[in-house]
Length: 441
Image 1: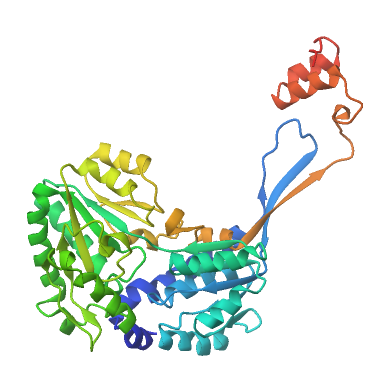
Image 2 (image 1 turned 135 degrees about the vertical axis):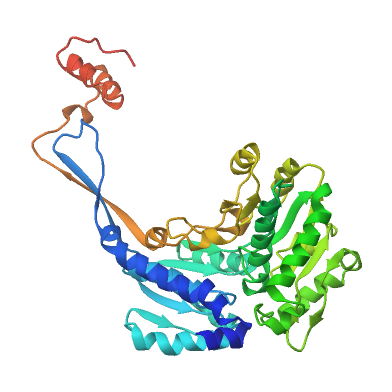
């Protein structure tokens, strides 16, 4: 797995274990430990009126599931949902991304050796194969990728009324308050720089897309970032092997085009060099690039980090709300009022305070987007639920019945219903005994 990730993306083995292999071991062990509880029927509470009646909720497999994964975390984004789908009892067809060919081939050749080929099948191929797959009838589709392709998947699924979970990305902001403590500033910058440049070179759906700061703090932030990048990646980041490369020439040229915009190029304050032969782009920081540029309109998905300055950090809320809902919002602050407002007044897949990307590793938190950043979620129990149908089961006795729930109708029965739906059991008794008059109409 390390060799495949190195070949396809240039990932260091430690990065590979941190972001994919280790996380998958954790997730599989967590599911194994919790599976009995997840699969168990759950009693449903009923009102006192439901005498001699019991109810429960029973999870059952949806059936035949299609998982289409992305290339940036080719093992993690393939096997994490697969854990949930198999835990829920489904049979699965997995379509890995052809953009990471060595990883795709490994999954296709190795999984059948360890897992029942009647329960899981890996199908390799490009867009034409994916197009044919989504046209088939499935009981569930989980897709990770771009919103453009996600719309195609959703349209095809609609023909069979197939439910979908769509995982996109978007422009995830990091709001950095002017922290007073030098220690807090150092930690915040380390977490911002580390999560941006050390996770597949910024080619991650939950990577920080841009940083928002107060204008008066921008020069301090820039200097702190320069120092931290040097400590993490050295004077020559490419030689450090601690940073992944761009996945292919197409994506390299896409990022190059973003920087070739004259107004964007003028905003580069650090880095900017790139080597097309090795598909490597060094960490690049931009200060206040044009907001109407493609760099600030589209998800960057690479090692380019714009810094956007505002007069007051509280203005970041309006700035975020003026754009499509992101997969994640990160806010580094001790300001309790700003924290509360960030949660209450913005909409995103998740909000994390004083760190970035770490929420992905929490099995007890749902991972998923909203609006342009996706729909549905998974991870841990949420994966099991995503791939399950929760069947309602009720059992009644023949001994007790509410005779007034059937015609013919009259005002007396209406009064009984009014009392019953308010759980006014004394009122029901008084009405039955004729001690409470029936209301008209």
